[in-house]
Image (tube, rainbow over all chains, first blue to last red):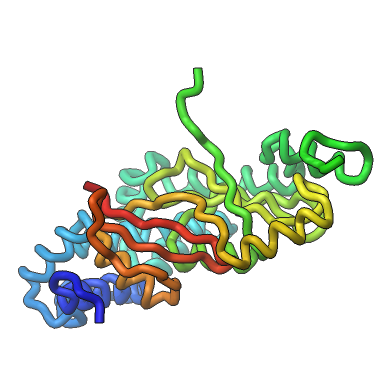
Length: 148
Length: 136
């Protein structure tokens, strides 16, 4: 058995964090999360913040925004993204998103879709030349990296 | 003058499996995923708080920097766990250890106090090993 301090505390906090990771889109609240870790709400918030640098609520918001960023790389509407990651208000979602990324969700989506299109059209623009050229020289002539 | 490193490569046996490991288990973010030809991608990821470091999950295939023979040699070396490609950092090593273990990451050393700090060792899905240390 591992010998490090308060293993049982760590396991319970990690359990709570993983609960947030799995259920971020649901209508969860702090009491649900604290219950998951078998702590009082106050004690839970304190321990969670010590370990993760954020309160459970702040962490939940971060997870939702990160998931929103992934969904906004598709053509899913901003409204649909907002509700599917667990926000219940488009204006709060937009405000929080902009605070974390400096862009509105629509601007972010536009930027990401444009980038995806460019990658699809001209992938070599996104690959460092040394690797792209090495690949292209493949069976034509010797490169610095091929063995004599 | 050189000011920083912005790309580093980790050689992997399979890019799809490496994606699953680095993105879904370790929680890294995808920076670029661009096709390079049949079956090969330019796939770069970064730790969540280090977006300016692109880690290329490099397929070992003849045609890039390898011949068919040296690619085979390299794959065998990677499978054997020859390479330690670096040291990762976390805010709390015990919490990170518990979480990654629960997600199926293989640790070869549990967190242990060394003279330089607390360290754990884990392997990726290809066999490469990494040190994990706690931020002071």
